[in-house]
Amino acid sequence: MSGNRRAYFKRTLLNTCLCLAFFVTVNYMIGARILNRYYTNILNLVLIYVVAAVSLNLTCGYLGQLPLGHAGFMSLGGYTAAIITTRFSIPDIGPIPGQAVLFFLATVAGGIVAMIAGVLIGLPALRLKGDYLAIITLAFGEIIRVLVQNIKITGGAMGMGGIGKYTNFSWGFFWTVMVVAFTFLLVNSRHGRAIKSVREDEIAAESVGINLTYYKIVAFAGAAFFAGVSGSLFAHHICYLEPGNFGYNMSIEMLVMVVLGGLGSISGSIIAATVLTIVPEVLQTFATWKMIIYSLLLVVVMIFKPSGLMGDFELSAARLVRKIFRRKEDVPQLPENYTEGEETDEQET
Amino acid sequence: MNRKPERSPLVPVPSGFLMREEDVDKTPVLEIRHLGVDFGGLVAVEDFNMALGRTEIAGLIGPNGAGKTTVFNLLTNEIEPTRGIIMIDGYDTRGKKPYEICRMGVARTFQNIRLFKNMTVLENVKIGLHNEMKYSIGEAVFRLPRYFDNEEVSDLRALELLSFFNMQDMAKWKAGSLPYGAQRRLEIVRALATNPSLLLLDEPAAGMNPSETLELMKNIRRIRDEFSIAVLLIEHDMNLVMGVCDGIVVLNYGKIIAKGSPEDIMSDPVVIEAYLGKADQ
Image (tube, rainbow over all chains, first blue to last red; front, side):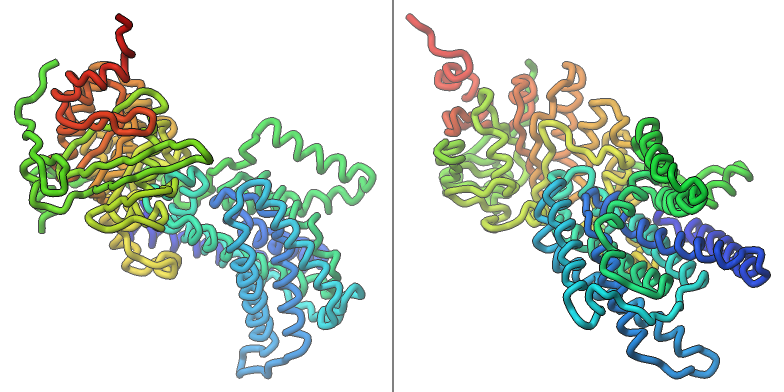
C-alpha cells in the first residue's frame, strides 16, 4: 500500500529496470537502422503526445474538470523554448554538449511560462464548472493563438523557422518518464487524494477540510507545465512553428486521447495517445477513408466502453510479477495484538 | 421506549442557555446568537439561538421544510448568514470558508450520502485525515521519509477508525459498492477522521430499519463517550431523538418554537401543534 517503504522500493526498482531495458532496446534499434527515420519520427511524435495527454489527464481525469485550452499551454511552451534555443547558445561543458543543456533549460522555461499562464487563467476560471470552464479555456487557447499571430518575436502569421531539430527519442523518453512519474507519485499521495476528492464531490471534499481552490490550481499548474514541455518537444520536432499548429483542434485531439484512454488512467492515456498517433499514419494509404475510420473507432469505443479503454485501471509491472509468483498484495492491517484498550493508551501518549 | 437514566440533567448557565452539568464551566463548543438568513425575500431562519456543551448530544427537529438543513449549512458556512454570530470554541466563524470551518473542528455528514464513490473505503477515510498528515507536494513527489511516516501512521489511524464500526475488513472496497447502512457509517467515520470537536449528523437514521436505528443510537453515544465530542443531529425518527439526545431544539418555519430536555419537548403543546396541527373544537 501507499505507506509501505519496501513495496515502494521494490516497485520502483522493477519499473526503473523495465524503463532502462525499453530505452536501451529502442536506442539500439534506432542506431542499427531497424527503425528507419520515418518510424523514429512517428515514435517521437507519439512520445510528445503522450506527455501532453498524461498531463491533460491530471486536470481532466483526476481533477474532473473539462479544460479545452491545452493547446494554448503547448503553444506558450513551444514558442518560449523555440525563442530561447534560436537566440542563445551554450558552449560545451566538457563531455556535456551545450546544445543539450540549452534545450533542457529552454524546455523547462517553456514549461514554467505555461505553468504561470495556467495559474493566471486558473484563478478566475476555476471558480466555474463544466461548460463554463470549457468555454473560458477554449477562449484562452484562441487568445494565445491570436497573440502569437500578431507579435513580432514569434514571427507572426508567417511562422517561426530555423528551430534546431533537437527532439530525439532520448529527450522524448526522458520527459515521458518524468510526466508519468510525477503524475503517478502525486496522485498516490495526500495531495492526489485531495485532487481526486474534488472530482468525486466538491461539497463533501470541502466539508472534510480540502481547500478546493488550492488543489484545483495545483492540478491545473502541473498539467500546464507538462503541456509546455510537450509544446517545446513539438517545436523542436517539426522545426517550424506557425500559430495554426496549436489551434483548438489540437486541444480536442488531446481531450479525445484522454477520454478514449480512460479518465484517471495514466496507462490508458499512454495507450490512447500511441494508438491515435499511429492509426492516422497507418491509414495514410487509404487517405479518403482515414477520417471516417478514425471517427468510427471513437464512436465504437464510446458505445461499448464509455469509461474509456482502461477505465481507471492502471497497468502495473509489480502486479504482473505478483500474479506470476502468486504472491498476495500487502493490504494494510491493524496489528494482530490490537485491542481497544491498547489503542486508547497510544492516543493519550 | 426505554430511555437510559444515566443521562445527566440540563442546568441553566449564566449566558441563559441550558447545559449538561459536566459542561457547565467549559467554553461551549458551539454558540449561536440571533442567527438569521434570507433567500431573496424569504426568511429561511430567524433569530436562532442555541449553545452546545462540549459533550452534549443535541437534536434539531421540526416538520419538513422547517429549515433544519439550512441551519447545518449555515454552521459550516456553505451558506453565509445574513444576521447573527456563530462561535465555535469561542471563535467567530464569519468570513471563513467551509474547509476552514472543518479545521476549526466541525465535521458533518449529509442527508443524501456524499461519499467519494469511486475511491476505496480506506481512501475515503484518509481524505478525512488529509489535514492530519503533514508533508508537502515536493515531499510526496520525491517520496521523502516524511511521506512514508505520515502515510503509515494514517493507514493505521484510518483502520482504527474503521474498526470503530467494525468495517476494517472492507478497507479495500470501493465506497460506492458498500451496502446502504455501511455507506452511512463510512460517512460518519470520514467525518470523525477530521478530528472534530463537534459532529453534525444530518438524518443519520434515514432509511434504516428499527434494529439498525437501535445500533446507531448506541453508536452515537459511543462516539460521544470515546471521542468526547459534542453531537448535533437532525432526525425524524422520534425514538432515536428522544432516546439519545440530552437537549432538543424544535424548529418550525425557521424559528425555534421549543427548547429543552426530551421530556419537556414531548409534552409541549406548541410542539404537538406544529407536528399534528391544532384540534378544531
